[in-house]
Length: 405
Image 1 (cartoon, rainbow, N blue to C red):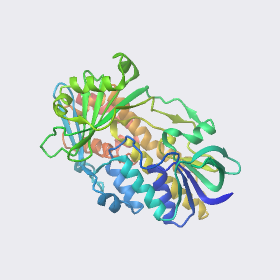
Image 2: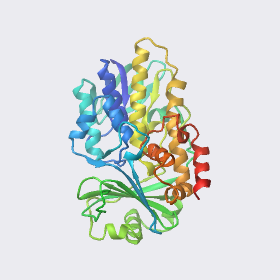
Image 3: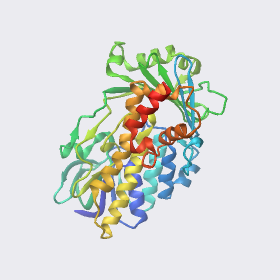
Image 4: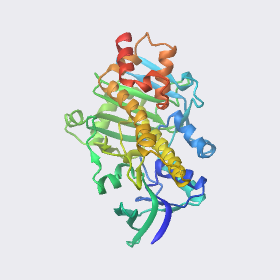
């Protein structure tokens, strides 16, 4: 049986950035990834907070050199032709005010490969089949069908939608968010705005808030297009994913213009019932990071931000623990992560019940302190409890909604 300081389940952004940070401090790391990289995955739009985390672990320059599409903000548009442009430069003065739109198959492998270059032992096409929580032994089946065992001082579960330890340890619980579907495809040769926002992610509201469309420019010619809606709305069309995607894109007043001459690059895909939650984020010998903890919704591109934040935070606390410091995982990790998760959750709820759209499209919302606080949250800076939208997100949103409606 092989021994490591840390075994990480999952080689996506959360797992790889944790491995990088642990290797930066000299600890032995084993990363177990079920799939073979590169692999296609959605969640292609990063937030400025991601840049700060990548910089902390020494990866920002490498990501910048990869040539990803620069992302300077987000544009919201509804079918009444209301338009709101959020420029990340208009935040509360945070260090980073832009980020990237990334092909995740490239971005994830970039982090994965750099973890390996730093000395982490990386295994792909390897599946975790058991976990002994008391002895901290992870049992896997490798690509050859052989069973192997690894023992670690700490195990990090970064398995994403696979949610390995939540399943094995019965930690899964129902999300408070409604069940929704994401139906997506990549296209080429769409028509974009020429006002300097061509690299921004654009969100189109469908009908009377029936659904929304993400439009993520991955290059000058390629765009990721996804539709998010309730299960009931999807089922009301009585068709398959491709037919639904075609119908919504062809009938939305903005999308039908943008994609009139565009062509699909790949088949239409779908993920359903993606929101999830757990009863705890840690145990005596393990910690959950990224989507293995809680996944909310793609509306504000929070997924990779929460993955990187939790991966770096967990790695830093493990390093402190290994150095002999007593770590309060409830306070320093779970409660900390829940600050940001709860802010994003309130924004998700306010988006779907219409309050946030009222705020965003209000002609009273100007580039003053209120707007800058909104921009700061949409930039991923959701742990700064000195601002009202973080320390009291529900009350702050409700107050601004009534002020601006």
